[in-house]
Length: 238
Image (cartoon, rainbow, N blue to C red; front, side, top):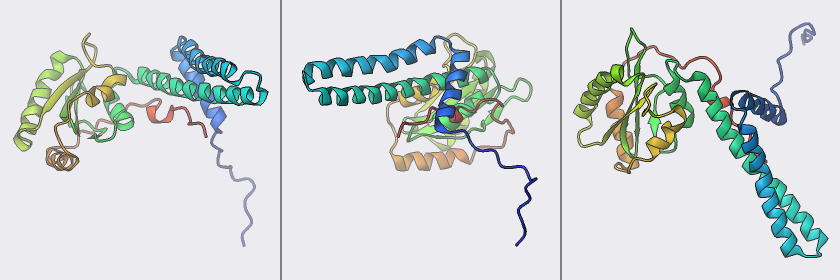
């Protein structure tokens, strides 16, 4: 058997859970200093509430009070991780805001169950890099314009007509993500899609998605480089 070459470079180890969480915390703090206070409140609030409850219920039972304190620590840690995850996600999106392909990054990482979409846009302006994305779910078809309304409105209407030809009677919604004041922020895309009234069954979603996918052509616009929102989520406690 051949001996292992000791001079060969070793594969770098992935950071542990604690180190990952600390890296996410530092990144979030750098882009949103106020998030530290929210995370502190998220930890201290549940801890204090559980401990106070335990004092009234346990009385002089020291063992019971210790259990209440442990429960409070676990509850505070859980809420802390939830807030950290949300804040880190927003911080990550703030880094890619305004870049071509930012909507694709959100669709890749944040879509809820029942929705399907591609990180690659269905239409792109070669000159301005404005783009149109499409998502299909229980709420119907959603067309998402990435860029100023003045430049994406026509692109969205063209795509709406194409989709309507192959998906008649299916609700088609349009949202804008860009510099306009009434545009939808990146971190609210998923919640906006989830707010639409259910109009399709699961089987219909699959059928409609197959129909509209036949309209898609390759655009060549990739997700912007930088921090991937899928990699900044805080690890879940075990």
